[in-house]
Amino acid sequence: MFKILKDLLIAGGVTAVSGFVIHYFALPAWSFLSAGLWWYIFGLIAIFVATLILCFAIDDDESIHVVISLLVLGVYTVVFIVCGIASSKMCNAHKLHDIAQVTVKDYKADDDSSDFKDLTVIENQENIPLVDMDTAITLGDKKIAGIPHASWYDVDNEYNLIQYRGEYYRLSTIDYADDFFKWNKAQYDGVPGYVLVPVTPENGIVTQEAILVTLEQPIIYTPNAYWSKDLRRHLRNQYPSYIFDRSFMEIDEEGTPYWVTGVMTPTAGLFGGKVVNSFILTNAQTGASEEYAVENAPEWIDHIYSLDYLMDVAYWHYGYGNGYLNNTFGQANVLRTSYFHRNTRQQAESNSGGDSEAKKFAHFYGYSSIVDKDGEICFYTGLTAANKAESNLGWLVIDTSTGKMTQYNLVGAEESSAQGAVEQLVQEKGFQATFPLPVNIAGEPSYLMCLKGKAGLVQSYAICSMYNYSIAVEAETLPKAIAKYQAKLTGTEEPEMTGTVTTVPVGDVQTGSGKISEIYTAELNGTTQFYYVINGELYRSAITVDERQILLNKGESISFEYYVSGDIRVITKIV
Image (cartoon, rainbow, N blue to C red; front, side, top):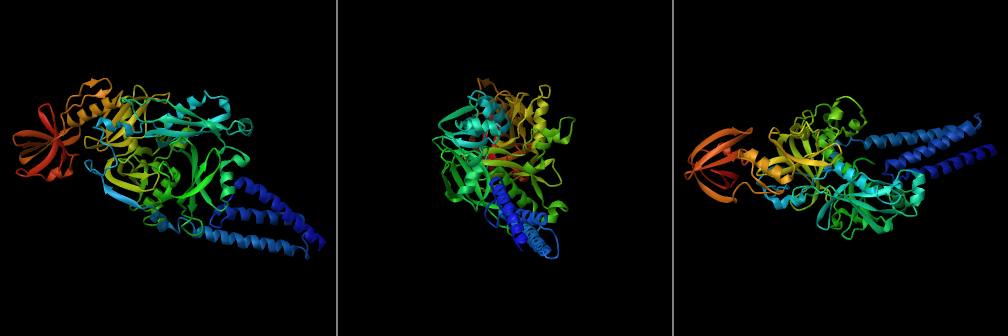
């Protein structure tokens, strides 16, 4: 009996010590809705049983204790497996599909509710985030080289798009280098600040400069810190039972840095289908935290949901509508976002040779950050049929602060095809196109891209039609690219430029109406054009202005908006 008690105490002691060490580093949530806690308990039972087996001299008197321990482990494992299956995507496909509430719209270029700016108005260019994440990383890495003890720190590659004091920037935190000894030196100084990269053009050109913001009070709590200053450990000490999403940095209007961390709640089975209904705001300097419901978030927060979470929810919505197996085999009515369909970037970066498919898309992120008509920041990604990737069926716009998803139906060129089309314009220079931004130019749904050289900096700007990616232009400034693109769409001569600002190639927009006395059609730059004789004047209108034009006949009356270009009047909107 004494030996049995001794062996049980040894097994218990080893398990307790192991449990403390594992918990300190793994930081499982103390909630049975967390799979992490289930794994943690499984590990403790397994350690206890293994220690007993090593300690016990197995004989008729003592083997019963090992048998009981193995039985407990077996029962626990069976329960864990059953809960895992009940929480799986296979068993909860329809629940996962219903998590996202998607508003579906048919995209119309002249729709005032459209989320995309009409770039024919030069003043609207301040809301176009042209600097992509790759460029921001390049600029940020150069900036950090100038701070004291630069080798102690790294710049995180998140670079979320934010609005700060009325301007748009990509924000990244400076963090400790992933090295314990460097952190041990740097911890007394703390993290000096963060990096802001302006993303919108000035006079048609992005500045391509990074701003190093140094703080009077350094940042103390970060993901790369150790011991009590590790952000995730700090949050776990404050909220022991919470299941956390990823943390990312935001700044308020005074420039104070905060960590935003989503709180996840399972909705499918015991621990599947996690959704974010609240979040924790943690002051990166003081460590003070406060929980908010999503609907009560401070106005200055632009990102409540992480990219991975939102794209997972979108994947479930478009993949599981007809069940789990259909997502893999039949794929009836299954759509894929560009984020997942071309998510080969990591493969490409690890592929050192050859012209593989992965390497072809090395600069293809599958999403971009955009600004909608209300100035709100959103993620954008294309929507493609699961078995056909040559064209998009529309695009998905997700508000990063509310999680609201809007699907715009529009059949057009797939993003990588548009990138390839504009890269062909400058193939002798070897420029690479950024992931396209969806824009509306003179009523034509279009892709806007920057072209970058080998150093990763923007060299020029390109625009490509969504309907026909053979209609593509490139220029050294954004206004010039817009002017060239408008000229190519309308078949007019390229306008003269004054400095870096476009001299608008047409007259002011006017309204008109009348009866159609003659109708003619022709192809111009790959786009069907309608020519109308109305009140003795000749008007031209592209099919992209309004597809209902194919139903118009001689003798019908129409109202429209137009501008004068040379000897012809170009219709921009049919009322």
